[in-house]
Picture 1 (cartoon, rainbow, N blue to C red):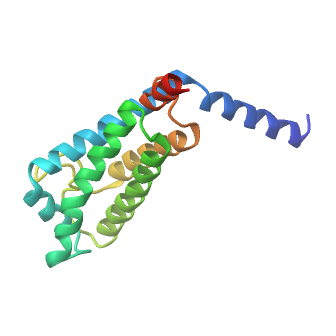
Picture 2: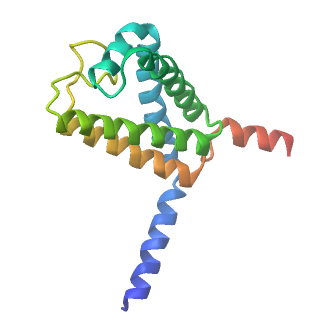
Picture 3: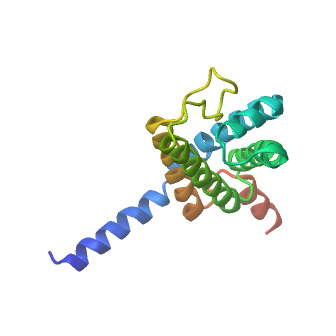
Length: 167
């Protein structure tokens, strides 16, 4: 077997994985729920979330208000979009982009020796601390969002249902 046929086999395996409707639905639900839960917690207490952002020492003063206000709503809307299968590719791209920012922020805090709560799901000092486990968690969600970006909505989605009804 030459190297070319192994590559074709790998590509075929990847395509069949991306066509697995149960995997795509599972990833949509997993990533969607994670972002809905994270967003709702931050929307419920924006002041504490703003403090979590300020603790990273990347933004200060009034600049903290922008992500403290916008980010939770983006998380919630992207999460709901993934759960219901609406604009899955766009939501997956936004989720992947947010995760890159989260990973860079956590790495930055770790490099500077900051002992802070990540501000991901639980707000305030009782939340999970920045560290390698947070990096791995975010990398896992990032990989899942990339799969969704390339695979699309899958068979059980509102977008697909609406296309069938109108087509």
